[in-house]
Length: 169
Image (tube, rainbow, N blue to C red):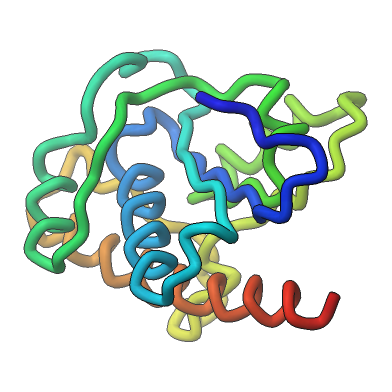
């Protein structure tokens, strides 16, 4: 992964789940699609990672790829594990659930990172207080569609917030 250049006008966003093959690549793909649709590709650096190393080097889960494609979203890349350096490369580290949030916050302790570490569903208007994106790995296709819908709603509002923040600077 390329590091974000110092002084770059880009906002760097990293999506994180457990294995980096289902939820975080889906969020990365959806957010990238929304950014490109808005003509804002030049304003964002987008990536994903996992807190665990089980799937490092693997492509996104085929079920996630199928659901994404059905909605016109392409998923690319290979799974990787989050590194301490990511805490300095990214402005926002957007995590899928509380367990992974805890893992990322532990990694950030004492690192001097200024990254905002947040749960993705903080931006989901339909979360009803449930801030976690469930892991669809052991479920069927319906679980992946449900996760896609959560991710899309959340990413739409995240992008709106980030566009608003950039405009106010």
